Amino acid sequence: MEAVCVVLHVDALEPRLLLMALHNAANLRKHYAETPVEIEIVVNGPGVRLLRDEPGPLRDRIAGGVPPVRIVACANTLRVMAEEEGQPPALIPEVGVVPSGIVRLVELQRAGYAYVKP
Image 1 (cartoon, helix red, strand yellow):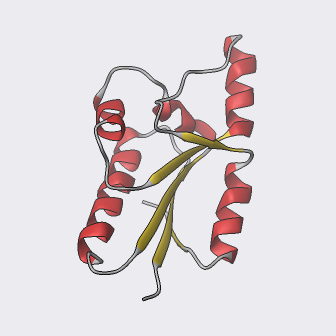
Image 2 (cartoon, helix red, strand yellow):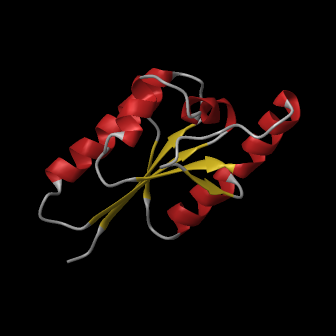
Image 3 (spheres, one colour):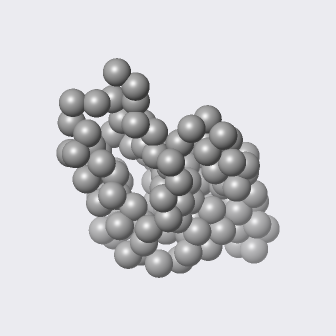
């Protein structure tokens, strides 16, 4: 059976958009319960600030067992944040890092992932 592959893109500093992406991921998993599903949430630009390892509902949701989904932050954005703040930001431990968010989006779409922007 062929996997359903989806990339969700969050690039705004709006918690509701990241929460919506997490809800979308859960709904995809529920709908395709009998089908392999690959889901990645790519976060770049101002949206990366949502992934800081700070107390709050986003951290709790991501750290507390979101449906199996890979969440990645853009290293380019992290570099800019580190320059602005004088140190690299601490991310929620479950969040991975990719060299470039936009490049990752292109790579996944070229690999057949459906693109969704909540």
